Amino acid sequence: MPVERRHPRRYIQGPNASTALVPYVEKESSLVVSGERAWRAFEKAVAVDLPEPVLVRHASMSELTELLELLTQREPERIVVLGGGRAIDIGKACASIAGLPSIVAPTILSTDAACSSVSVLYDEK
Image (cartoon, helix red, strand yellow):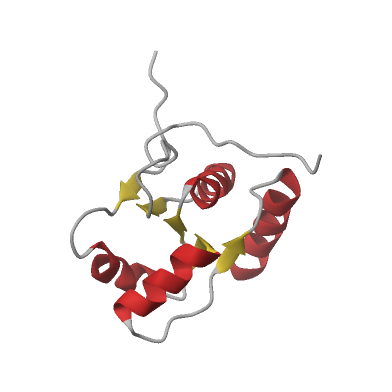
């Protein structure tokens, strides 16, 4: 039996994807989660001043806990995820736990994270 999602997940891919993502990233009501290299490439591609994202390091359970604590401080309306597998996995997990919609912009082709319903999170070991 299929599970109905409480909030849809939107994907932004293809030509001009960076430009299409800017309005969501600029909003104060968005929490942006990204990998460092993906974020730097995105900033360079769009060449506009943007708020700093939460940069993903390991996609670990402790990092997820920190991200969820940040959600209680900022109270965003959505989570915008930009990057590869680690950023996408932790962003999807965070949005799912918090009951928030997410916008996912994958930056690499070699990951299934953008279309999978599973998030891979690591422990500190």
